[in-house]
Image: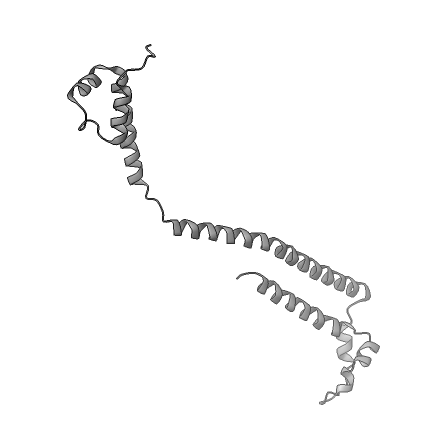
Length: 171
């Protein structure tokens, strides 16, 4: 293997870099390149790399800087939204857990004390008219039917929680 450099290698490299090969070179330099292995390899490699670079540049169009900037901004906003949604999801899970615990506690107390909803209806005055005095809170609590206030309160709480969770999400 010969590691020595050719004396004409710098001149050939300069012509290749300026794009003057083979039009702007002397006939004796072209003859030298056809004989010298170092110079012919240099010409072959340089021409191959130039053609590969031109082919790659023509195949892959470069996007405009504005589009690249827009995509970067969109990616940044999506990452920020993802970071914000994690605590919101945690709050939604917490609210759902709270509602389920309240419902389980309500069912447990009703199962222990018995469901007396129908007995309250039987205590309402008989006849064609309904007296509003029977619906007063004092009457309700004295009859032992406190869930008549608890059920609508839980329903309103669940409804408001659902509306808040819907508004917190981007749907």
